[in-house]
Length: 184
Ligand SMILES: [Zn+2]
Image (cartoon, rainbow, N blue to C red; front, side, top):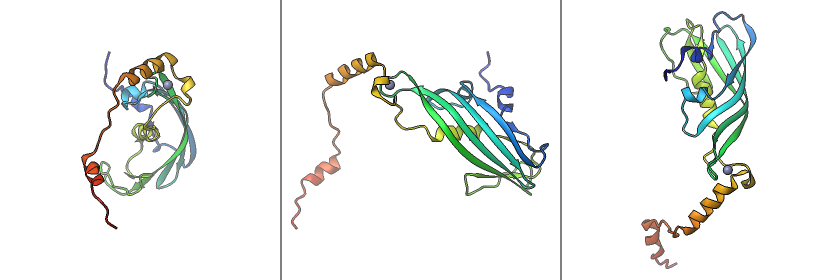
């Protein structure tokens, strides 16, 4: 077994626009658990997402619109059971082809625009797809309703937390302010 990212797995994300005719093209990619084995996000355990990509090729730019539909898998922060996060959104990326050397990168102020050399004929979207998916992961991931949580685990957690002595973290700077008497 190899833990290296399979070449085939990465090729799946290569948009070879060089050979495309100008106009609109449609393309689709399936994001499954393997994707998150290759691209690690500590919160996400897997995924089942369809990505429809519309590729509009123009003379000096390629407009990519990604439509995501599906779910990401993670663990519930409340009951620790598996849960899913619905993903349904659209993202747009513009590849601008400019007269720069093939291996150079031109910085862009806009996250939605990437400048590529006009000698380049393909672009791998694996990393951008990963970033789009990570953008919407909430800080706190819990089942929508507490009744969907694992009741047994909740019971144990409740018991455990009620046994813990209640300690308050006090910020000394604020404590000091309490002693200041206001004279006006
Ligand atoms: Zn839960």
